[in-house]
Amino acid sequence: MKMESALPAGRHGSGARQRLANARLRNILRDKWLYLMILPGVAYFIIFKYVPMYGIVMAFQDYKPYLGFMNSPWVGFKHFERFFGEPQFWMLFRNTVLLALYNLVFFFPLPIVLALMLNEIRLERFKRFVQTLIYIPHFVSWVVVVGIFYMLLTTENGILNELIYRMTGEKIAFLLEPEWFRTMIVTQSIWKEVGWGTIIFLAALSGVDMQLYEAARIDGAGRWRQLWHITLPAIRSTIVILLILRLGHFLDSGFEQIFLMLAPTNREVGEVFDTYVYVKGLTQAQYSYSAAVGLFKSAVGLVLVLGANWLAKRFGQEGVY
Amino acid sequence: MIYDKTLGNRVIDGVIYLLLAVTALICVLPFVYVLAVSFTSPTEAAKGGIILFPKEWSLSAYKYIFSTDTLFRSMLVSIYITVVGTMINLLLTSLMAYPLAKQHLEGRRTILLGVLFTMLFSGGLIPTYFVVKNLHMIDTFWSLMIPGAISAFNLIVLKNFFSQIPDGLEDAAKIDGCSDVGVLFRIVLPLSMPAMATFALFYAVAHWNQFFNAVLYINDNTKWPIQVLLREIVILAQSRIGDTSIDEVDIQPLTIRMAVIVFATLPILIVYPFLQKHFTKGVLLGSVKG
Image (cartoon, rainbow over all chains, first blue to last red; front, side):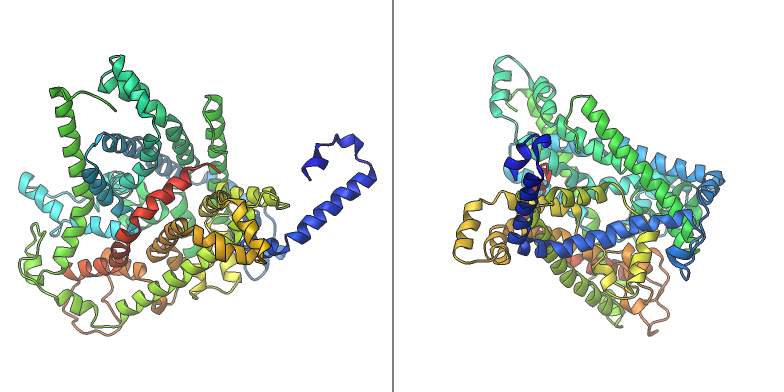
């Protein structure tokens, strides 16, 4: 097959094309078991990933389940117009973007710092001990994380609030007051994922050639200069790739976590696109409208990830795609 | 890094050790606290304060949560979807990854691109819900196992792993009369045990922690997995555990909530140390670009 495709296209006579087709058919027949093996997986992706993409047409209809996609009336951009016109649009937009920004600014650098610190540790056993412990929160569910935060912070006997009370004589209603909402979300994310986030940076760091450090030392570079000129450049591409991935999921504000943290008192600051889709779509049965909101979110996400990747390539980094 | 043991460097080292130790403690102390409170007698716990070791031991919280079937049933549901779900995950993922690892497979690129695209764009919650609904999976455990049967990311990592296995081994097996399926199960999978262990852990943890899918697809509360029950008890603090109403006086004391958290987390903490050495390797695999 490789040989045939190397021929200039113009010289493909019908005979050559026939031969190519025959060769392909032979390959397919030879690999029939491989195709059979791949079939369930392909079916999975078609049914659970591509059929829902087709299902997006409901965003342009007034979808009624008993009429189906075929018979539901088309309404064009009606649902999008409604969504962009709602005052809630800006609330959702602000909440989603602010949470994403907070996470980017406060969360993103921390695993890098932690990995750099771990990389400084010579005592293998201490290093492994710390690593073992900091990975653990990653493996518990958001329900447990949020639950533990509730218990620690509640004004009724929450241990942290007790401590604050003993020191300041006041209690802080972290869980009720909206101004604490974003802080709580970011703190929870950091607690759960900061340790796990170090793995990939540690991997990148372990690949650094020790000779570079030796050479730097001979040239008189101290610890900080080694960090600046050798260690950081060594993990730069990893940082960029992770940043791209993050930007691509900029609008995914940690659905489960926010869903669990939402309460009537903090909806003004906590409601994001994802939770809005759930509330409108599944609890109020406004299917087409919430599908439109979902499509808006997916489309912006796609643009963001492609844009970030393009930018990374412009700046001379390897992109993800 | 290479540096001299000067005073300045020693101080920096000291600070780093201290910061890391504090970080590690912050990561585990909440669990220690939860565990300790769950074993403390309710009266002692009600006084509040810092408990990292129970002063007055008591099993009453655990007796209470097992006084009805509710928690036990939810745990069975979770165990079922974790075990069966993970087997489905591993089977489907490896069945698909293996052919994709074969350079010569016609259409391989198209399929890979198709998979990659699903990582960038999705139909979203509502259309996916309708697919599950139209397949009559609502209120069945299938809805918790099948819609996430293959993770695109894991698939690609596994495909890369398979393609590193030398072709010679597989050719030899084929000459000995092994089919493609046989090669996968007898040669390739046994050679991929570290990767499979990692994916098993990741998939299993995802199933055990699964919460939102159950909220979406399971209306029947006798089929709730443990995480949904946990939310009811710990966060919403609304339901008495159970359908029977023993102990109406109990208003969800702290110890009971803690005990439920312990039970919902225990399996992971038990399995974690055994698989830990594998998964860092597995994550490294994942960082290799596809």
